[in-house]
Amino acid sequence: MTPYFQKNILENHFVIGLTLALTIFILWELRSTLFSFFIAYTFASALSPAVELLVRKKVHRLLAVTTVFLLTLLLIAILVFPLLPFFTSQTQSFASAFPTLLERTVNFLGLSPESFNLRALIEAEVNAASRNAFLLTSRAFGGFFFLVTTIVITFYLLLFDYPFHHLLVSLFPDSHHSKIEQTISIIKNKLGSWVRGQILLSTTIGLATWLGLAFLGIPFALPLAIIAGFLEVIPTMGPVISAVPAVIVALTLSPQIALATVALYILIQLLENHLLVPKVMEKAVGLNPLAVIIAIMVGGNLLGIAGALLSIPLILVLTTILQQIPDS
Image 1 (cartoon, helix red, strand yellow):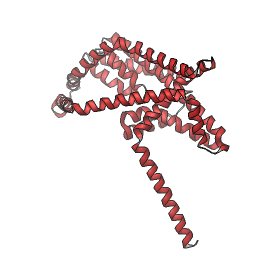
Image 2: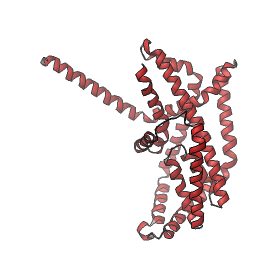
Image 3: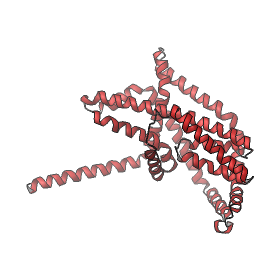
Image 4: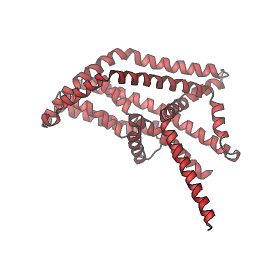
């Protein structure tokens, strides 16, 4: 091999490495925008079947998308707004009482309150947060802007579904167009099935938890149930995490009620794993549990709660692409 040829190889490797590093840097800097787009695409995939059904009924696409959007928002409003005042008051009471509940639990378990000093620690965090009112306000506005942007992107992805996917397909050579279209279709179906299945699971688990905790006489049953429903998005780890605050509250009542609370969460988890998940999620997801846990940990470490929540749909996309590569 001549020195000139070796030099060309080194230069090519350097250019490839530099391009890859620059691409990763740009993607990382644009992560908020990319996440907003990915969330929008995921929800658009969930709403797409309803839109396509109306389009097949000869409804104009703009009217179909608008109708599905308005009906979805109306359904959310009907479900959320009646519970909002009660949930707000319960959540405020729970947040105020949680340091005391935690301290009682520590005392009940025979741990040294002085070594933990939980009340002082929590109150210090709350005071620090209240002093950063400007930061909290800016984050709230940032979150609101992110939400509005995601909703708008979802609307336009549904409205311009065909042009958008045609643009994606056109980025690849003509010989791969058929395979790319098939891969996009599979990804859309899986993401849509995951969202619809997850909404059904979260609603069912939240409702069952609320009824169970209310039956046991556990205070703050509604916020605890909403925590359980929300964390249902995180497989395996979510239900375990959601049980912790409920057991802490139950321990302040009696050990027997705490054991009953643990039994309630275990029973709900067993019913979910053996009845709901196989019927609702298995075909949609079909992921290895170990891969799911690793994806959640990596996503959580990189991007916090948002990364953990988005790890499952993201790994769905990646595994679908990898499964399609050998056939290309």
